[in-house]
Image (cartoon, rainbow, N blue to C red; front, side):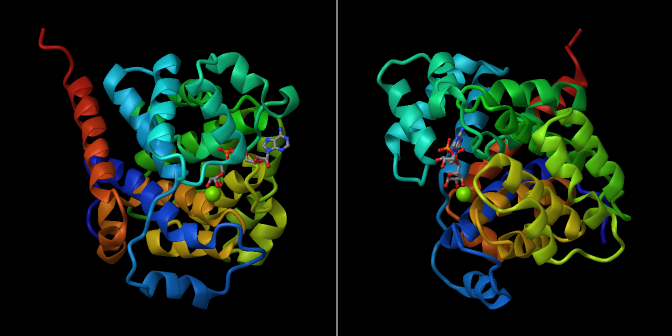
Length: 322
Ligand code: AR6
Ligand code: MG
């Protein structure tokens, strides 16, 4: 293995992970039960273009908002989500998110509209977690900022505590991966403990803890065991722990992580997207196979957005001119 990838390569790896995992996993979204390895291979070997879905569309919107405003501006973010949704409403948005974005497009304020979803519970879907990668890039891997930024990005559409904590967990996992040495073994136990600590007590922390023995074992856990513990549905409390477990099942392989994540079945695009973002953040863009990247819609746009975050982080490190 070569030297540790630099920050630009890791930023690219994280956002390429989002789009490649999403686009590769999308054809199997909703698959009941585990996906046989042959079905995953068939997807990989196909020659059709890999099209991205709402997971990536919302990631692009969040990235553009952070880059344009230089901060997490919730009103602006809501406007960016709505603009993407209006341009391309058929990207596969979750039903609650589609309804909410239509309400916002009609002039509703995001705060009360998001809070009133699902009879006032707010959405517990994984929509806030699946799009959160740009928050980790904006924070440059600074863990002290990631949780608060992730929370504020989540509540624009998802107010249920499990959805908000899912976004915090996923953003923290990416931020940790951005800082983790790529050479040598990853301390999986410390990694999971840091993610749990970031979310605090509750349903998400419990769900993450439920896989700790599997993740820490010297043997790679079987997809059957992980899926049985976490579930693989669109609820953040299922798919976020499933994705983090997938990234820790194959900590040194982007390809292994994506294959494993898709094999879990259920919300395959979102689980693969979240797992691949973590893998790409640690392993860098060279870990993303060229054959996947070339087939994936909008991969160059995600690279461009990653580079803009890297330039911002570089400028901050250099400090003001005087
Ligand atoms: N009570 C009951 N069901 C709920 C609740 C709740 N409080 N919250 C969510 N659900 P949604 P998302 C169920 O619609 O999170 C795309 O395919 C309900 O069935 O807010 O943006 C992506 O690829 C609801 O429709 O959207 C992701 O897989 C569903 O959870 C996913 O959709 C999803 O919540 C992202 O969905
Ligand atoms: Mg999905």
